Image 1 (cartoon, rainbow, N blue to C red):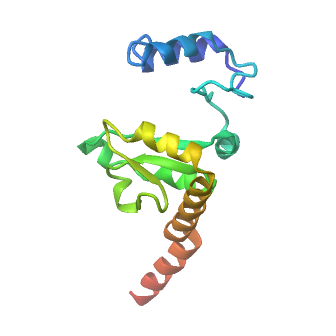
Image 2 (tube, helix red, strand yellow; image 1 turned 180 degrees about the vertical axis):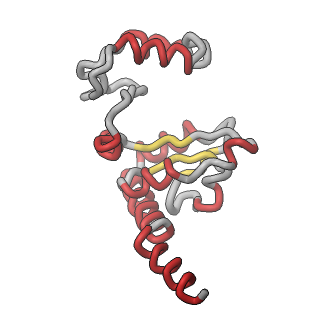
Image 3 (tube, one colour; image 1 turned 135 degrees about the horizontal axis):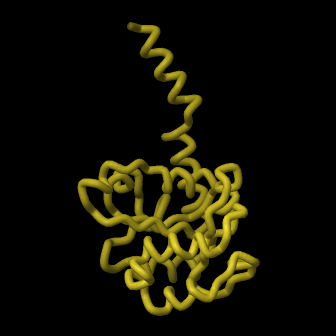
Length: 168
């Protein structure tokens, strides 16, 4: 973990959550009682706080997740974002529940490589389904890995670009 003082993270968190007003009461209460020491190891609560960490440790964080929740509101700004969260979940073989919006929608096959959730509903049933069906959970994680490894494999993409450049 970074060596920054816990107070610095709490102040940043307050800004992002509008003084905890933009999150549910339960989640706000959970956030304010945590400290950095053992904050999520062995956590049995429904929320898990992930502190900022060095980029070299970032992908290891996915090994602590059961499911990656990747919510995003539909809108012009968000449609210009990359698929990075989906790629990260896939490369770490983490099953994902994803908003059916750009930049993700074109990459999703509900029940094949991810669970696709609508904005207002679909999140809770998808979480329950993956919690109760370990075979589906494993299938989605493996299929997402296969998909992103094929679609976003830099060695393959670079070879393709090299061929195009050589044809010019």
